[in-house]
Image (cartoon, helix red, strand yellow):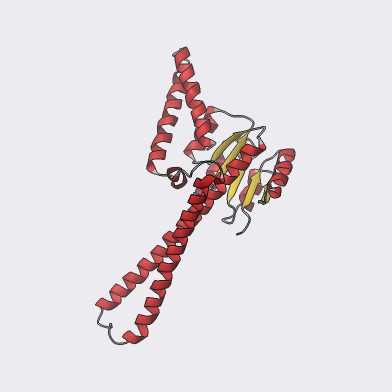
Length: 252
């Protein structure tokens, strides 16, 4: 198995260099970028995880991270920041970032976040491969059905049947193998790979999680808008609890 590949984007030289060294000691291949432009150029489909600072040149308004989410919709992204805020916490959930960690980052926390992100990346890649293989099989079956219904079927059956049967057998075998790999990765995580079972809904971005995020985001926005009009201690406490929940959700 290839070592996981990480892109670390941060404009703080000390943090970037020390963290990259720790990652490499743990077996990760780490590419580094000192700003958003360099990170945008370096990031490819071969990276398993992006670890990115929030406040750095080219991302003061989240423009870099929004662009990356559009270009790589399934890429796990771990955010690190020394300037937490409700806005960045809400944005991190809206864009489905994997983790939201505060500087100074505890290395064990970042290591756990990387482990979760890499496993999510592998599950998504394998399920994508299974889906693509299924699509190829479906195309083959459609072609066979069209061929059998045409007047040409029967002219050269001996030349067609064996190769098609071989292809279908190999395709289904490949799908079974990939499905087995997906199950193996998920079972490995459930058995304690990072200390907690996989949340399939989170990994696959299911509708339930989207509704949950939308509800929390709306609640924070309403509380933010009414904080001046209603100087209520209870409202302030409620807002604080929701903000903390958003941060914890982003760090899972």
